[in-house]
Picture (tube, rainbow, N blue to C red):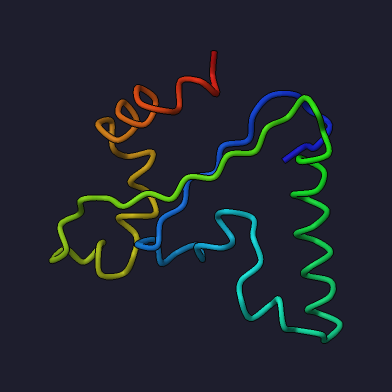
Length: 109
């Protein structure tokens, strides 16, 4: 994510996704990292602050985070391992049409 650009940063995350941690998809710190005072913990906090701070400080750039819940077939192997939710945003034409039609359109006009 270039913090020098203009426009919108739209992050879509799901607790059903077991490939990418929820907090990572949202570029947020996980609860454990907030208490981590080790060197790695401080570096992690600085990294998140640099990414998000650059976006927030840029008056021409907006950050939006959406948490979604997919209607997935819970019995499938892809659902059990979290893959289905990981790719559902891009794989589902229905989801994309609904997201863009209901709320996403304002970020792309």
